[in-house]
Structures are given as C-alpha cells and as structure tokens.
Image (cartoon, rainbow, N blue to C red; front, side, top):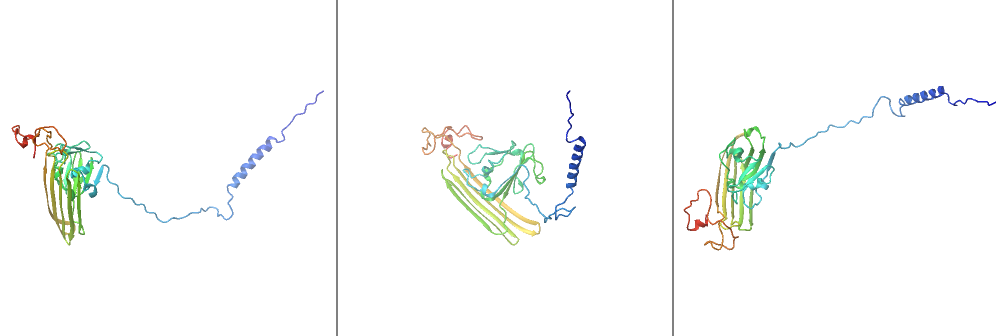
Length: 299
C-alpha cells in the first residue's frame, strides 16, 4: 500500500500578501523621511541679481549698405557702379568700358523702375516707366560716403517704387575737420587721384572734394579722362534746422575702341589688333568715308 503525502509551499498565500503590503508601506513611509539637517517644507533657493539682455538692431531684410572704403577702393574703371556689382540681386549690363552706358538691374528691374537718389534728390523717376538710364560715370568716388540699397520693400520716406531704392549719400560736414587724399597708378597708364575735406566751425559747415581718373585703355583709342568735384556749405539756423547749398561737376571724355590692323593708316602695334573698321553707333553718319573718323581714330 502506497502512502501519498500532499506537499505544501513553505510560504502560504496569506504570508505573501502581508510581505508585499509591508514593502509598500515602508516605501511610502520612506518618501516622507528627511535627511538630518534639512527643514521639512523648505527649498534651497538662490536669488540672482537682475540680468539685462541687449542686442543691436539688425538691418531690414533685403537691405545693403556699401561703406566708404568699398566705394573708394581702386578699380579698373574708376566708376561708382563697380562697387555695387558684387551685391546680391544686383546685375550690371555694360555697353561701355569705363561706365558710360553701363546699366544696373535690381532683382531684374532696370533703372526706370527704381528710385535712385543722390543726397535725397531723385536723379531718375520711379513707377512703371521712368525717364532713362543714369550716367554712373558722373559720380565722383571721393565725394561719395555711403550707398544704401533696398530690394523690394523700403522705408515709407522713399514713397512708392516697384523694384527698390538706391540712395547715394555724399560726404557731409563733420563735427571736427577731417581730410583724405588717395593716389593709385596701374598698367595701361591708369591713374586715379582724389582728395576731400570736411569740417565745422561753429554753425558753419563745409565739405569739398575733387577727383581725377585717366587710362589709355586696353584697345586702341579706348582712352578715358574724367574730372569731378563737389562743394557743400551748411549753416545751422537753430536746433534741428540747417540751411545748405551745394554743387557738383563732372566732365568725362571717352574714346571708342576702333579697328587696329596693319592695313589701317592709324595702326599701332603697341595695342592688340582689333576688327570693326568704321565707327559705329547712334548718330554716326554714313557719309564719314574718309579721314580719321572713318576709322574711328580720335573719336
């Protein structure tokens, strides 16, 4: 006869439940225990002094400012427009070597659809159609202090414009006398010289400048000779009001590149050979068949 004894767990279910409840009770009790030296209900708070955050105001989106050093740096054409050619959204279309006939586009809009000013004076008309291109070669580098460009939206003081604004600012009387002289010389007989001076004496202020640019050019008869000058006088009437007068002058002579081959009576071997026998362009009469002008020499 086989005897079978039932085996029972040494930990009955009642004991297991009591053990789990005891552990939970100790955990809950431990969460309310504070370490020695701490005060229940209080936090360790560190109070800092006042903090001031400042930042410079950024330029409006689509705005560029060309400073004096960039404008007056030596350039192959000695022309103001060359300082704008590397800016975003600006394209130059050249029909001349030294700036004469060079056009500017801003985001695809030509000069007839831009506002272009010199010291607050419109030098062309804005709107859907303007009054022609601007002669950029007439601006003296030494008389220009800053150029502000607004692409698209612009401050309300400029009024309505379709393509943008180019605001050219000339040198102005400075609080203390200041002068600048520049001289550079390069290949092809290129010479650029300029001088400016500005200052104030009491209520009277002044700003004067003069410049000269010349080059023989790369091709025969491709010379350029340009002189420019400006003068400005101001008088402070009372606070916030100033009376002023100014004048600018520019004189430029450019030569047209012409035919330069051994069969030309004006052939010069020191210049590269070039085609196009006769002078071409608007206003050139077909009757110029003989003489220097037939070959474009001295034109």
